[in-house]
Length: 467
Image 1 (tube, rainbow, N blue to C red):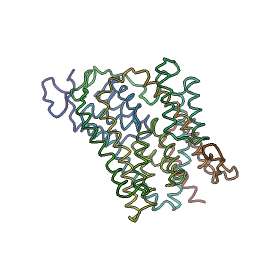
Image 2: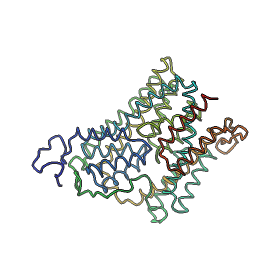
Image 3: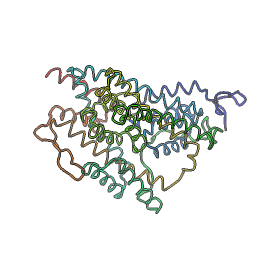
Image 4: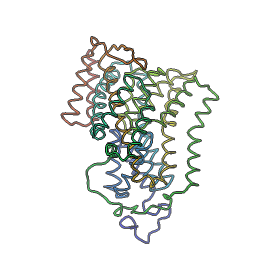
């Protein structure tokens, strides 16, 4: 492994790993990445790639993509998991913890503050207008996600058929999201084992453009650091520790508060979500909307859009919208606590059971991930799941559109309990115009997501203040 230009060949590297990158410097870089992590997983992964691969040359293209492919096989937010993986690769366990936690912290604090403003001042024209505008713009963002993911994932008729089947299952039949993911994964795995070309892996989020930096040209080099080699004893210890950190609060709440307590429901529901939510943040949103709105009644459909608007306009993973859901759930069912205190505890609990499992998956599996390289069946399972997720996101887009653009919705009977259709006479014309303007800005003018969201929020406030 080449030390220069990162450190002289005879320079001491005690406390820096075997690559000469000081831990304090790496922590500063991870803080910088966290502050710039807007725009969903594709944008966040691109930021990591630009800084770590192209700018710093700490990690090479091949290793970065291999780590990304592994994270895409896992449930949960792949961008945060990629940060934890690369942090671990550079500086062992403490590196993974710092990288993964910093990736979440700015968004957590921002959404916590904005959630407090929402429940305290949300009925004022200014704040109500901000969220009115955000909801209209978020609809365009979700449609953009359908197009972006679909253009990569639906490359043949088999993948299009899987997406269509997933949409029918979740929209018309009210099929649970985990079942859709499971069936798609099994189908893809079988297709991959059979060698069918339609299930060939590829697509998904990934860096694009820029000069390729090979592993041999980086600080880490082509070889693996000693701490990154498979170590069953370490993996079992770290996995056990994170399993306890994750499940101990859940079990304690079940025993002490009972299954009907709102905090117990938050802990159990979002723990389940952490295990089954493959396919990125928008797939998670479909599952959360299905359960948090329809099953638990924690919030209204329009408030899911408000939460997504907050997550889109703050740094960190889009899955942080779940924090907003937990905040509102605990605020409205405070269980004898002051509402804001209960809401804050609900937000912390939601974030805890959402992200602690991410560290478990990374620390348990990363040392053995080399064995997954080139595994056609696993890659095919991921490909089929990604195709199914396109159908799930399409369901989310239609669900959001119905509840954003119409003030009245009715349920039509169906096999799974019915599906929502709008009352056409209740069309909200200002919301339609804002959504059309946002779509024009995103698709035609190619304006960035953050400017579109901010402009829509300002226009929404101006409209409600004037009216």
